[in-house]
Image (cartoon, rainbow, N blue to C red; front, side):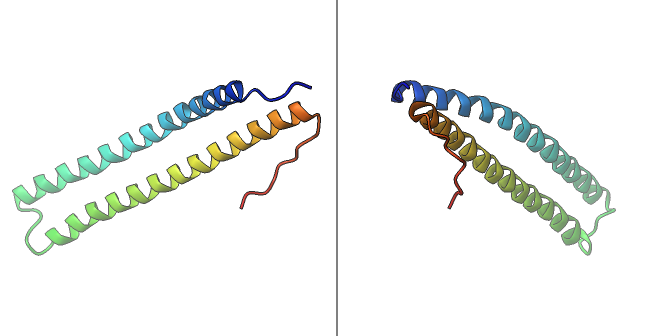
Amino acid sequence: MDPINSIDLAHQLKQEASRFLNKEITTISGYCKNNLETICQQSVLVSICINSGLITDINRPFFLSRIAVMLQDFVRSLLGLLQSTIQKLLILLINALWKSISNATGLPINKFLMY
């Protein structure tokens, strides 16, 4: 059994993290683009309706608050996606470390609970 080469291990972890994050960023980017485009379209429609008089001083706060709620929901969802991505990255890296230690020691390293 060969000892762990810390430089090779760091390189491996970086490659695995980069591969994983590139895939996740593509997914999150698509989610952001679609949602932001929808919110912008809604904003355009509201502005057209305000200019045409369909949305008045009486109902304007309602329509504007709906756009604000859409943005809040978008940001909350994005936060959840980012938290999930970070957790998956942590698990990926820990599993890679456990595998490296297991290979270096010949001992089976079981998954540990995260605290």
